[in-house]
Length: 459
Image (cartoon, rainbow, N blue to C red; front, side, top):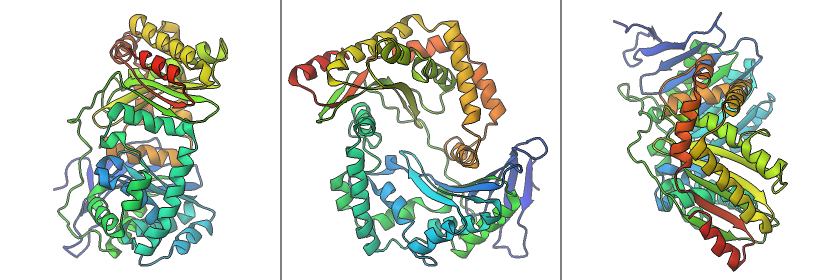
């Protein structure tokens, strides 16, 4: 008997083709915005969001693997593998992969994060079957040849060098290391020159086989798509590759929160001959499943999320000490970060740090005004909706939600959660987060006396 709320799909005469389970997770009006999920025998999950009013579709596959899953010796393997899946399969060469999508005017790319990896293609709705076939082929049929590993090593080393040449980007990697130390979360997603040079084709192949079976994958499609057609096409592609062998396999659960990591009061300085000093001052934040994340989002917006925010007004508008200054949050399965970034002249570092530290301390002790909180709630609600206006953003939302939370939340529900944040909620999370001793990361031309003074900035 089929459980309530589910539909039995893909019935065939063959017992090997077991019944898939389909559920409507979010019911849209007239089918618009409807989110459906099918779990195939073999543990592959497929989620779609239907938007009939557009002529495009974005198709992606999310893998439950990121740099956090690497040992120190494998640092950079997840990102390396991301590159290699574009290098060819049993059916297509690297040129065939790129030419197929280019020929229909589509866009194709991938990204690696600390806890997941995503491969995607955005095409006209009529070309969605092509995108499904190409991306599924990449994920299930990658060859990972030694020659390709050696060629791509050079491209990845150049990518590392490019990041090193951008201190405004590099300082965030430094801050992760400052906060987490020699932990997988503290190591760079790209790896280092030494770890990338040490990775072999055999080690990467083993990593691929361990982390890219269907139970670790979530397929997501958004736009002018038909759920059942997507399911049939994806299933056919995976079965053709022999990737759905174990009909009893179940999807891996979202990461749990048992390994909370907290640090405070650490300082890391990197002396570079740059025109600006790049600074990140921050402290432990919240895990992505923490119910207080909505209040933290409002706090972050009010502190450094726009031109009317406290930090922007105090550092840039009133004193002209920095061009770029903002705050941000990062949430992981078991912990998080809250940070404030500023880029300024080296001679102004101490003034910028004092202002930022004073503002954080003031908000921790006294909170934000009701007016600031109301403005931040409105800004956050608006940016949430505006950020979901294309099919790529919709695909990201439903794919990441399934992989990281195991559930879906409608946009209306998200807006309701933001609107329900109270001033007391924001003040409570401000006391908890901003009241902690901060850590500090700085990249720039630092003199010895400056470095000594910076150590006092987090005392």
